[in-house]
Image (cartoon, rainbow, N blue to C red; front, side, top):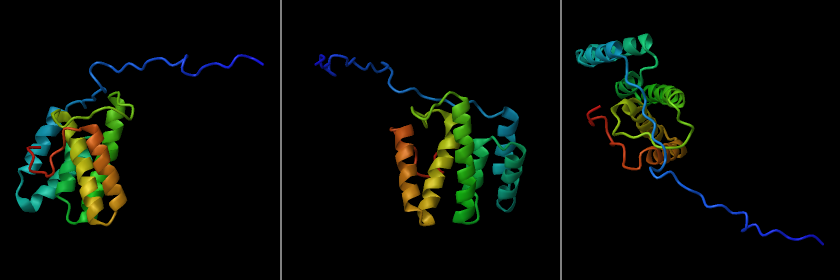
Length: 158
């Protein structure tokens, strides 16, 4: 009978990067688009949603615009839809920035906030429309992306 190998003998220690998990930082919004979004958000109440939707139409990769459109939605389903698009666009942007499905996406980085606001809003609207399991998954994902926390509301300086 042959020798039986000891599985413990082949075990190698796992070394963690001294800085921990990698952090991904999304690139800044084009300054022209950012200025257009600021102007749209400064519009009178009756025009604000329409003007933000024009920014989204002209710059569909602007995550801050999707988050703002979600904030301005007329009902939970419309808000849910805008936040969901912002979330999916954000996943695309994260992958393009080197994110591989794990690691941090921190609120402390202002350029990450459009994605994180969309994800937070998606979870809030999922809870409102009765998608409790999705709301729970979103809450867990947010906690994994930034364990230090993402503010609970849109009155968070974003």
